[in-house]
Length: 408
Ligand SMILES: [Cu+2]
Image 1 (cartoon, rainbow, N blue to C red):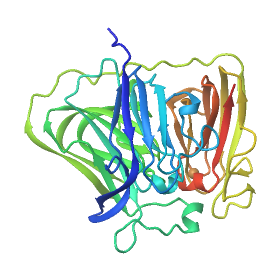
Image 2: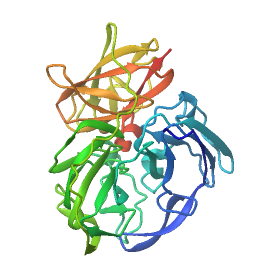
Image 3: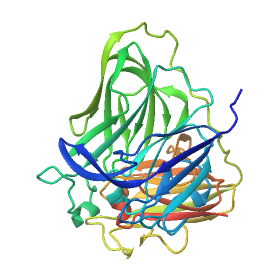
């Protein structure tokens, strides 16, 4: 029997936090004295109530990444609310319709505030979670430091106009240090890094991918490297065969590990499929839009304030990319005319990545479009409001790579 919806009450206080990163003790940003922020948890169908008390000297906003929530709770400057000034509180309240792996983060000056640590996991449990011994959160994070190993305050223009602010310190922030050989574990991988795309290699687990961006796959999928662009998530369910290590194949570095001790009898049951979340069904005539990604170093000049542009405008355009009646099925053709990769993240909705012949593929809230490539996505616009649609490489967003959709 499904449990009755309960209220989950949290207080999040963004504030400066002393922590050690890259072996150097330094002041960064966190929530409630924790770097990064604490894990928030609720059960599918619960009512989340989060009071954000701004303890920074700067403004802040908190966005609940991947959640299909009421628009006014989305935490986006200009489109949904004003910035929360220092020493002021803001109450966020929303039901959580989907079970899965989500995260929260600052959506104000986010290229700076997120890269200093204003993020944390947001985990929504299924009514009946799969049978595992440990549910482990793994956040893949990088940060740029100066010669003394502290956060590099110098943001050069070239970082905004190229692949972004790629960190020299890389780490996997893991919620559990040890497991037993033979344990069945669920790994919730999250990429809160502002600009880096990981080619993640996991050793020590025999398992399958069971969800992407919080949404269960219809069929669990085997994996080698897992590509995780900024903002994306991936759930892996598997059995521990050895010490678990997380390495980035592109950087050739090990980011973190989970030690093994003792041994237990391995389960004989197959890796289960997660129960589906409620999905909208595409219907009616498709409304089409085209989104050309332009700019960056050597990418020419376009309208608006920054280096990056979408359909010739840099920065939020006055009019939305799409103005859809509630329930409209939208097909957006993305074309990346730049020399860099981008990950387009849509607020308040998930969408299907379409194959070249138009078949629906993965159901996500962020899609990685490689340099010079394109992809169509299909989205049922079933959540009313003004929704941001932007590159989640936050240096790109800061330099103009954002648009929005209006759902009436
Ligand atoms: Cu980008």
